[in-house]
Image 1 (cartoon, rainbow, N blue to C red):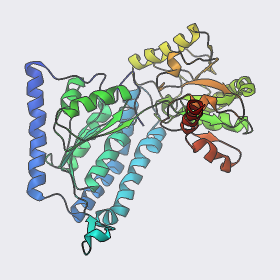
Image 2 (image 1 turned 120 degrees about the horizontal axis):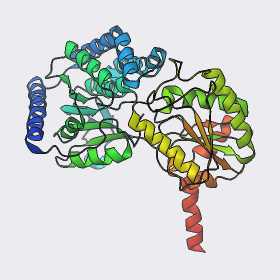
Image 3 (image 1 turned 90 degrees about the vertical axis):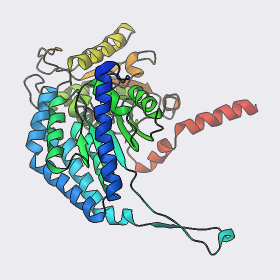
Image 4 (image 1 turned 90 degrees about the horizontal axis):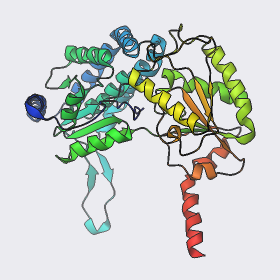
Length: 427
């Protein structure tokens, strides 16, 4: 669930910390890292029982403070339903912890490997060992889940960890910091909070592994900073994720399911439908159905605690800029505001917005949207040109009448494109 390119999950920019204050900050963070590395080396890494106890402590703390976490996230967003936080942040994190607890013993067992006859009577196996100190940079859109789920993996693997939540959601970052401080010693797990300068210094630390969730643009900068120490990096990045509706699939059902998923967290979800591929003749009927669906789900937007706000004014302005760019380049824009309320960047309520008659030169078709804006791209049934010409998505929901058709789309359409090139070259 990576954050949008306009507002990075951990920082708006990742730059080197310069000046005296920057050097002091770097030294302070490095001291925390060295303390963790020393503790890890002294203890040779937590054993099975210690890892299980750590996971159990984290589980209990999350469940005990779920109300405080929901309240902090609602404050960060300026309005977010507690039920949405429980469903999309708390419950998935709880399941992540319980899954690790169920499988940890098996994960820790060595794995035997086949050995060539040339090495008889030798034997080979993989022995899984912790790496050391893991750095985790989390995003703002699902601050709890995407900051602490990587921590679950790090703890299960026997590592120590330093976590940097996003400064764009400062209240929930502080609750997470206090939660971790109450259950773990700082030389085992610690949370670092602060602005973009802190995030920049954090990403440049010589971790044994660095985990980052966020946009492709910021991911490149994080990887560049980590390369100074040859730190291995795992990037969970965003992208443009289409939803493909088969031309024979029920359009009413598609509208209901698609908009329910799109409007969770006001579209600020990396795997929310980024744009819709729809049969040409179904575009106009879909717009009418979408208006009815939104009116049923959210009869009011401003005066409705269930409709999540945009995270900040900067992101709101970016989203409105995408819509205006599309409008100026010839797209038709349909704003769905059932109660005709005043939605502004001051209240950060952005109405669900459909954009059709789009073209690839529009910014809304080039950037990850990360908001309640849905472009509609028409296609002709039985042709896959619209898929072939687009980069691989982060996710791609398929709405089909028959499941056996799914494999035809799941087989990567870019393979067909390569075959086309090969045929042309051979000719």
